[in-house]
Length: 296
Image (cartoon, rainbow, N blue to C red; front, side, top):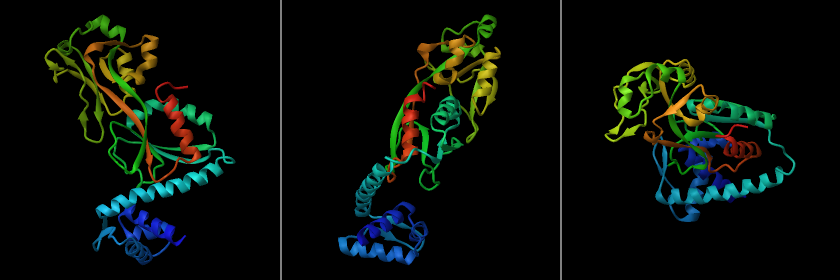
């Protein structure tokens, strides 16, 4: 048991990069953490940390040992959860970070709430790159590839972009036949709120990328207003296909230049690798994996 305590002290110090923060998490003093790590280093015969007055960083041997320790604690937690899951239904607060485009997943999230009414969702919508572990999130939903070895991941699905407009818009302005034709149309553009940069349309023609001087009729930092304006016949908008599935099925929007839109994006859900899936987190991961792009 003393060895497990030393291993836990090491893992907490490694993940927080601080003996003081590790002590606060474990309810002991920073000196107790330092002594536990020192005893562990003496027993192993290697130095696990480079120490300075302000921060501790892992040595190469320490980084290797950290991965092994995480597996040990994951197995312990897994064993405990296997027993608790036989009697515990998923319940409790689940803190999840999603990108702003994730607001278009609200039908799926509503379906999850109906399926698991005893789980309280705490949703944070932001394009800011959050630190899952340091900020205390149970999970995050993000696009793109994952490079953080501290996180486990599951692919939720992928979406493609579609360039769409309303039948009324096309009746008045005509439908573009090539990306170059967009210079004569009106664009409804998405603005990244964190950088104030307008999102490029992922269009390609014979000459390469679509022209950058597409006249802009409106910009918005979220997508719902752009969908509404497009349905009102006020311009063309390029959005993820799952965000406008209902509009395409109802015929209030129609797509153009499908062959020129070549960009696809993958959604993933991530959670700390040192944390085994709790019943509430497993329920969320499984539900999102099955329904993220096909709302129930």
